[in-house]
Length: 221
Image (cartoon, rainbow, N blue to C red):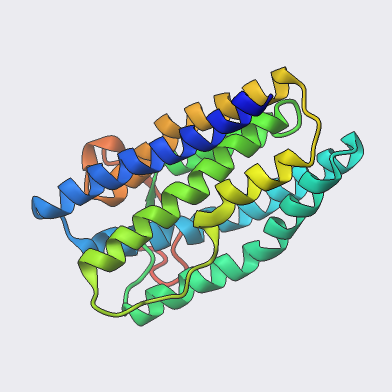
């Protein structure tokens, strides 16, 4: 079990490192740090409501299963969801930017995990934690390349992998459950990276297909 827990932490770290290298390379080759920040904040805003509901659903399941530490952790994340949404709005406002329409991949992400959250809670949890870390890391890179000042405070998303590891140490999980966590991280390594690559300007990721999410620029997309 301990080796599997170490692997969960290692896989999250590897995934974030891979993304940082990719985005640093994109921006160094001329991609816009400001565009990256606007797109990542738009993704945070667009996904916030579904993310909040999904964390609440996971908390309920972990409570029923007797996973008290995980219930308390994920329930707290659900409560923080509205703050994450407001912070994304504030960041866009400070940039004097409208939220942009996000790619079809974001809708597919929501649809996929909305469909499996009950039957595959561990996989869903692994993917969502991976996405929190990916998106926080991408926003950190965007701040570094696109602005000399801090646009918005940290929302703690980049710490969720370590928070999960601490909670898991207090639980007794089956090997199959830990394996599902790893499967979720693997899914995020595909779907989550597609989203951050779009944010970095890889337009081919979405094949030009978007779905409207902006309350500031309704009707433009």
